[in-house]
Length: 160
Image 1 (cartoon, one colour):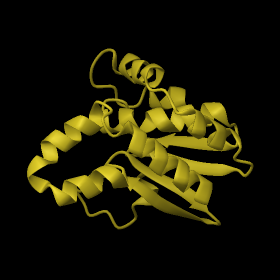
Image 2: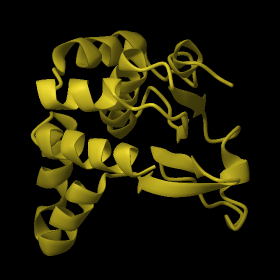
Image 3: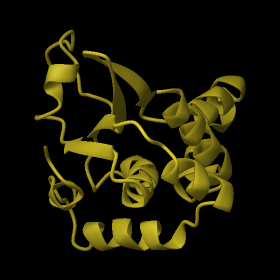
């Protein structure tokens, strides 16, 4: 299982990307309600995160995964890059790239994709307002959706 430290080294394209990720994690504060809910999870949760630190969308997603797994050691995150995560996309056509971040949760013996490039709350806004796609993506990356994303992820983790 690849660790958060491994993720910080995946295909770095410019200096300081790992430090950007660490600064984002430090900045984002979870609500007390979230902290309590995550700490109270009693079953093992296995997540595979196909993400790379150079990607701003990945840095936004990984922040929550790292914070959740730090709060509760029953939450296990296996970090993969596009190459090591390819097994989760068996129908990928030649030349087609895996969208990152892609997050999978283990359910029984199978893995369920629950986040592909953007969280549900952001994707829904993008579908409603396609002309504002770039603005919405920017707002996602700078944390404008963090409260809704936090809520979405807590709800999902509790459903597992």
